[in-house]
Image (cartoon, rainbow, N blue to C red):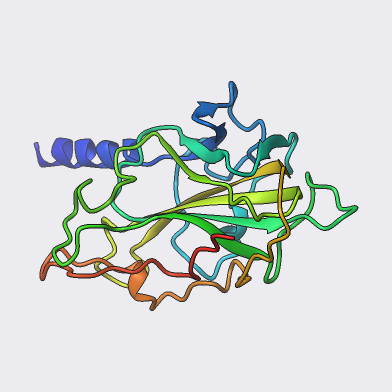
Length: 231
């Protein structure tokens, strides 16, 4: 019966994975998957990225974009997961401004073009747990942030990233579930988002935020990458 138990565990692990396939604006998801979200390599498998030095850390992209959603500053922008975000860990949101004249469907956000614009981080210090009490995004189907009022108008790539820490007791154990959507921002201001980072490049495999300890219990946690730009 051991083989049967192992198969069940493997099946449960596979079902626990997820992908972000729809944009969500003000709590309303798109009707169809991969509309304003660039289809990822995980479109059939739900797997994550485990090598933070891989170009897949940029958008995990399988093919170019096809559509662009409109969102105003001050509105809620986010992603819907294909299943619950059922791994513990933080969720972060990054944006990159598409240069004037560039085709948003094919523009590659390479180099230091991303800035962090939202985060759902750990809460509950000094005693952190592996439950939703510490990880507010855990078990959520929709994750989102408020688009800063100071964000300039224009077209942007918006990147969601869920760092799954359930197996991150060793180097390289963190799994990153990510996707990139395409939006046009209206009603914006004249802010200058910073600091700008690159993917890959923003994270190092040795970053404390890419590890987790069930015992001894962690008393603090800081997600990798830059601080959030609030405008």
